[in-house]
Length: 130
Length: 53
Image (cartoon, rainbow over all chains, first blue to last red; front, side, top):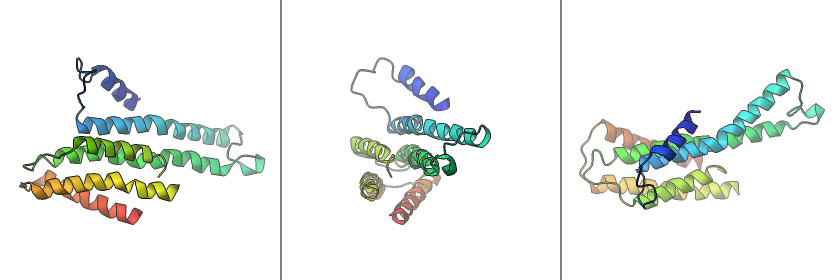
């Protein structure tokens, strides 16, 4: 609910009037939105796995029960489809915070914003595998 | 596949760390708490990357 709220807020309220120009959002905002997109992709899988586990425990389904034809490894696969991107959900907004803290007590600002944005996007997409 | 992408993901991380390190080295620093926090973050991120590899 909260990350859907933040994504819709960005879509409707961020930079009104500049939406079709070639203006980049601030780097911290980009990283937070990227983490929210990762969350929207990976958290529902965990929710489905939790519901399946609850059905197994309380309502006699056999999704994960080997003796009734279920697959216990499916439980681990579903969990790690959430668990691998979760690392990057946590670390990618922190990249944005550090990127904003470093010029604060420095005479220089962090150069090559496009490369930094490319780097966080690549890390986010690869984070679904690693 | 898994190990290949594990190695490949170190490339953008290295780009970010080198960019931040060069920004810190080339500028004149004012040592305050946010700077110390970010330096400790970079240190622990590097150590975690090495142990992960």
